[in-house]
Image: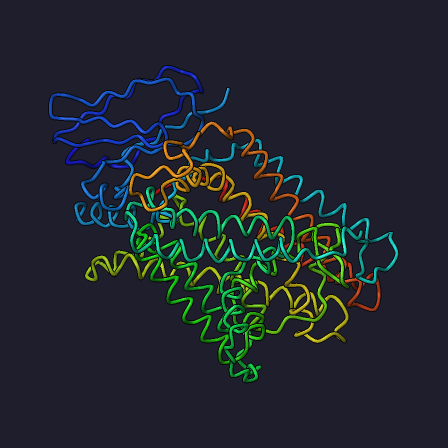
Length: 89
Length: 459
């Protein structure tokens, strides 16, 4: 990720109940939120954010920057950085 | 330049987020479901046409079974009071409650329980809105307390145009408006709508306004014609689905516009979440860059207006073809006004497919919110800690449900159109011939629905 934006959000596909590790590197400090699984991690320069979990929910989940307005109106939505599709079977 | 595009992309995504709140995690329909669905749609259309080739003429009446003749005033009164209570609660919560859409009962009540939920209930079971319409209920109480409306006759030239305008505004608020997730703003929109509705009821009379100008009444009423229960001739009756849509009288042009607008706005809701739409919108931004964030609103409004315009043009063109292929003895107005009702199952089917996950997942939040409607940290019923279970519905179920709904909606639409054709045209041959363009149109609309469901949700 450069400057908080990717060229075009990629979609990663996995199967239900797989162990998933997502590593997101950034050149600036950014707070990342994976929807659905509701996991938040922070990425910093030289310290990528690591999401590690069991993909027990099927669906298409976006990961977005968690902005400061989240307190006032939940989900100040930023463009999706990536999508994770957890497929059945 | 790339920085500008990136900024616009950010603006587009943040503001064009469908529903303002309430994410759907639906996986795109896989290719094999899409192909089976498409094949079923085309095949069943021909099967229906073949059935009509053989069967007797139909009068448009349908079988129904009486369920009960008794109205229970206590139950009805309780339901009405509860509906009015929820209505007032939603507005109050919007103003005094937490402004986080997940902590305030108003957002999920309005967009999920009411909008999606009543739509579902109407399409499946019949005219539930007539029971729980809070505006009608409260105005009725005011009348019993002595309020005398002016009861001016509703000008017939107005027709369903006020309803069309309201539906367009509602669709814009639901799809394009960033404020749709802000409780205070939603409450204000409800208040504005209340003023309009009660104003209309005061001037024209409660039922006259509801019937002519009440867009929820008309919309849910149309959905309800598909539903299996009806109150008719003093009894609650059970009937086959969709038969209520057989037209008693042809729709006038403003009513045709309203029906097509329903189809177009539910379709647009899904279309706005596709990558194709994002690409088109971005292309439209190029000339509008100077306007900044107004450009977002402008592009989304253009999109929301363009789809109904396209759909109406397509429908009217097809109606002209139907007239030409049937007997030219039947007027264009009558043809256009009769067949439009048979499009409603397609709109219902897409509404059901598109919103099921929202109802079953975001809708669960209402369990927690009834214990803490204002987000103050209360726990009235002990459910405040309840969190939505995302595994309540798995991907295969949703895929199957979506395809089944869309296919069945299409089947109902084609069936209805054939019934109408047989009633309208003098000869069976003319009737069946006339349905070829209508069938093509319906296959077109239905495949658009299916295509959208097969697109990854973007933005």
